[in-house]
Length: 323
Image (tube, rainbow, N blue to C red; front, side, top):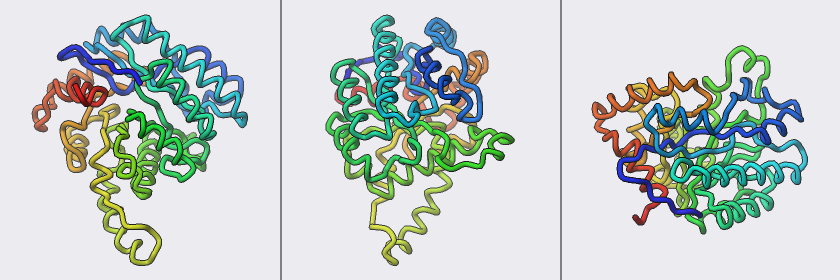
């Protein structure tokens, strides 16, 4: 895995996406461009850099968007991910210091995912991996992912998580109410709680897992989860786990609606050093993101948060814990 030390004070965007033609063509070939209920936006490196320059962002961490490129053929999925990762590595090399990338993995094929993670981290110099909340019903935390988690733990990997469409969803409902407005938050919460319930973050303490979208519904769900846990353990439905120890290992990006209330709620489950800036470019128009970022920087001190930490230092510590 690559090690990149950011310049002092350089602002880092932990949550952005690269959407190359190779990925779009693969998705469109299977008629899945609207699989997540909304259009995949256009993207180019030049437009991304222009946004970064105007927003004052030095470095963006790029990942593959949704949907996960699995269409029933593991070999095809592996090929799409390999091309994406090589293009991301080339973009990073072409613009030193401007892009990092977290590699796409061809899940739900765990063996292929481990093979691609090894290639991306050890050959391409990926800065981490991106994992979907679920890959066609295979959720983060599920037992079949244990070999992958063990490998990523051995690499002390940064894992960027991102919600994808649940494996079972009411299509009529999401045609009316975009799933990004509520289901993405529920989906992220579902996946992270599954990881917690399986004690993944304690059993693999070297993993550095980033939760998107201001913690999603975790601040609301955790008290209920913790309240139910003793009952479930007593009745033999769950094993005892240290919920707080698992949650303490998570990091959280502020992509999405980082309102004052949301930030205060997030601070009930994490500490300031685990909060990082994220834009979600290009899924929101650049002018709106620039305005939201300026507002966020101005409001962070009122929550006891240092803007330089949230926008720079915390990311540097995440990717370079020993520096």
